[in-house]
Length: 371
Image (cartoon, rainbow, N blue to C red; front, side, top):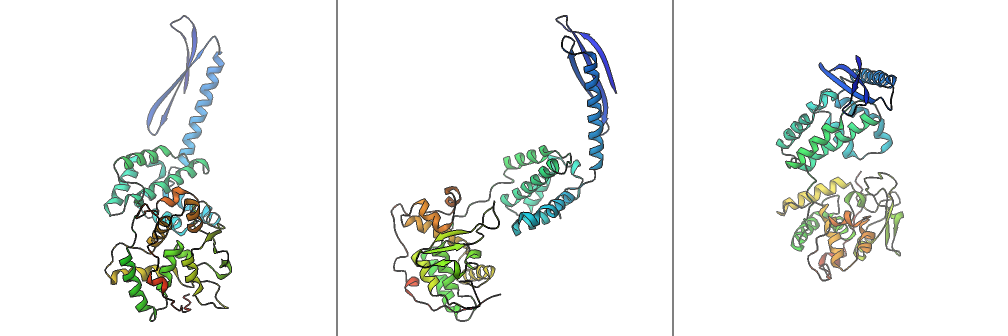
């Protein structure tokens, strides 16, 4: 309800004062605005009060319409409307669906406050997850909140998410994932390759060649098991990697990479088949699991197959290559992205793999297509 009065200011001038009162969430609120009589007329004050009352009424109705919408409801809507067209990674889709299983996701969105998100993160950290994993929860929910505000017209307050992020970062509850610096030693590689060579004749995966290709190509294992003969050019020393991983472009990111002589040597000894277009026709997850089992068998801790990409990038710099040369092999688009993989062992150029026995061995590869 609006009320109006005319008041005299300290300098003797007059103003029209409009005052409106309303109830929101069970509490009384008052808004007041002054209009100098030298500039405005009383009808301007009346018009402001009338328009403001209308805005408040519409906002309360809008709030009531969405009062029972949960965070899970909006997350599912986000998935339904954008997953198919945006071509998300499996990780993003799985993360979003997993978020809907938590208690906080089933509570009305408009009732959630920053403390609720902080409590959720504390509970998650208590289960043993890393700060990086916990951070993902808030990052995904911030995206949902932004969609709710800008696209679906849900009056959600992004401030609650931002405040929770600020507090959780300050108390080290969330943070960027630690960057791995693990590189295999020559002794570790020799143990792994020796064990793999002993088992290659009894298993479907030719792990020696797969491991060596990872070291000398800097490819992700998913890329290794996807590249095809038609995209390989021995003369130009190139290999096209299709749909290379890129957070901004899930599909169609086809990158022509340069091959090292060592990588070419490994490709050339792979058998060809009229019915199989891939150079390494194997399942990437099987290769990763096999590598992990082998490490366990020979007593090597905390070494992943993906660490060999790290090893490859560092080795290329140790050879004396510059950033553009290395990026043509690894496929990185910026030094910032590449830097996390690089941990050189010395300042002077060197090739620790020169005359390495595993490169001198001309191993015949077998074609074992794993569906």
